[in-house]
Amino acid sequence: MLTRYTPPGISRNRVLGALALALAGLFSLWLQARFQPIPTRSLSELQSEPIAGYVRVQGTVVEPPRWDPEEPRLLFRLNDGAADLRVLASGSVATALQHQERIPRTADVVTVEGRVRENLDSSILEILSPDGLVIQRPEPIPLSLGTLPSVTLGTRIQVAGQIRNVRRPYAGLTLVRIQDETGEVEVAWYETLAGRPELPLGAGLQITGALGLYRDSLQVVLDDPKGWAILPWAPIPWPIAQALDLPDGTWVGIQGVLLQRDEGRWMLQDETGTIEIRLSQKLQAALSATPPVGARLQAWGRLRQIRGQKVLFPELSLDLHWELPIVTPTPFPSPTSTSVSFPSPTPSLTPSLTPRPRPTVTPFPLGEVSTQQLGNRLTVEGVVSDLRGFAPGWAVILEQGGHRLRLFIPNRQMAELPGREGLYLGATIRATGVLTLYRGELELLPQRGRDILVRRGVRPDAPPRLIGSLTPDDQGARVQIRGEVIEASSFSAGLRLIVRDESGAIPVILWENVAEMIPERLKGKGARVEIIGQVRIYRGELQLIPTVPWEVRSP
Figure 1: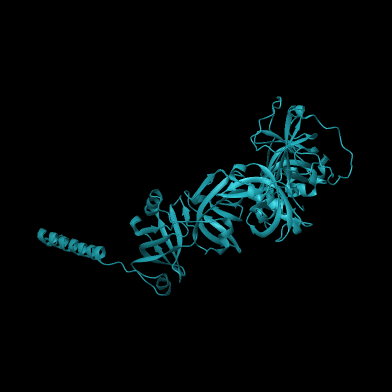
Figure 2: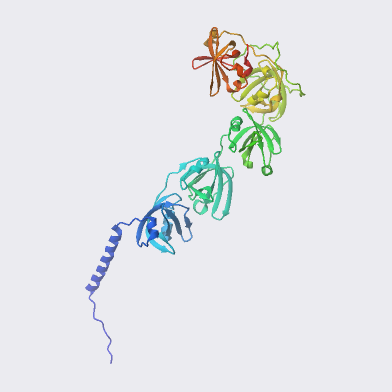
């Protein structure tokens, strides 16, 4: 009969001792792992030799991370200037980083601790704890779009512009073209990282991201949901005269009154000048409506030189905005003038140049102008009761039967005006132009200099005075002097002459638009001149200022 084997008994004390020894070993290993310094390695070391265990690396995120919320899984690429390394976080670690909003972004400088794994032909660093990722995010540099070509790739920047185009080449990526007055750039918008909002054309968009390159074209990489903001976009348009001086190819905005509209060619005028706007057939087809002549129009586009003239070319329908103010017909009162009163002019005994006769329509009564719609083209006639000069041109107040109307003549039109030497206080003027508003006051804007006819000219005149007799009490008075130019010098806004007679000397200020139409022989040292102007005191100095060029003449 076989007997069952019974193993010898094991002492309980021996079991507990072995267990305690094992736990002590594990604790010792934990202490070593916990307090032993983690080796810091360069990325090139990890790529050149096999390294096992836990390491620390540092580098810059050089492209948008890949985020897969399904697994979840985070993968990004680092570069330290010598080599690249891919970094992986998955499972609960990736979820924790996402909940803590600690997903790295392009251009971030990061320090990563993790375990090196060999993956096919390259190494990959796996983050085992959310604490193993430290992110340093550089402050963005605010820049205009025109300066981007001089910026180092990978720099974190902040730019703003108007949304001009939005397209989606494939799911997950939206390309947004923005533009400011200095240039344009495309934004690579990674939807899984930055979201996918509505991006209306014409709105302003501010982007904070890294400057990148795609097929030799600059891009701003957006992979941060906090890296964008929709802004109001309302840049200030330029005066037309200044816009015409800008270089060919400049993107610029202007505004003024629409004088002509002939299919794809429009003419716009403000108080400084006139410019042609050309619309492509594609843009004409995109417009749901067109502005009427006389509308206040704002246009944005690119300047091009066409046959020696600057022309504005808008690109999209959103580049054109217009409005037609509504005027309630009311009697047009005769306001009390606050300007300095001029002496009553006398008709010239020797008439000025007679303009070439041409057909004219019957003038519209000034007393009924207020009943007309803005934008209407009118011909009016009146007597010049006030004349003032500004940098962009001259404002003329026409009066007829107690009713008044402001007529503005830009510099270029004044230079083209036949018989302009007779345009003075008391002269009779007939003008054709578009009715508009200027600071709440009705104003007539002629399109060309030949749209103004000096029907009865007046030669400038004022009481003659010796220069030495002028005192501060004469401020605001209009006087006439004779003398010799003993000094001539230019300054930023025009020309300064010193004129002397036998009694003394006085500075004469010729603003740029006035000086340009005065003959050279009357502006140089040694010239004998007769000058009419208004006395003023500027910084304690007594000066004489002519209003129109023909107030400076030979004696």
